[in-house]
Image (cartoon, rainbow, N blue to C red; front, top):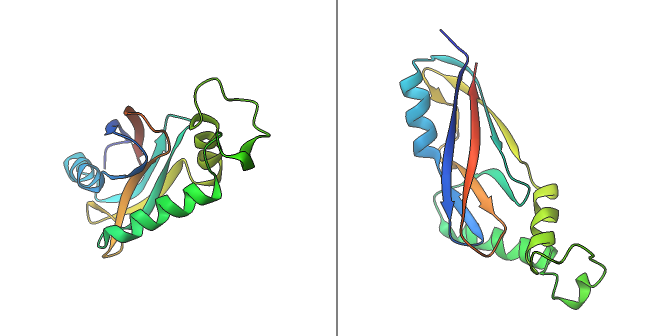
Length: 142
């Protein structure tokens, strides 16, 4: 294996939710020619996260989004009146809190030229902001 290999994935979002990019990761790993190693993914933003989660039933993603919204409501909610970082909108500081609670990097084994994921596992960017963004995820395969 030559390497390490590096790239960045751009994921466009249009509001809170989970955005799967597993097919792009699989294709890049396959094209790298790497048969085995460790894939590291790192999101280069402070208001979104990365997750490995079920990709079979979309209700899982809806429930995760709703649960996290209840756990960390917008700054306009009375329970969040203690927040001081509010100039960028009622979703900004809660997005930072959500990103602090969830992973911003993932380590995934690679074997036989593919990420080692379970049958129903997908790789997601979890957007926490309300408006559209283009997010960058750095990938390193060694």
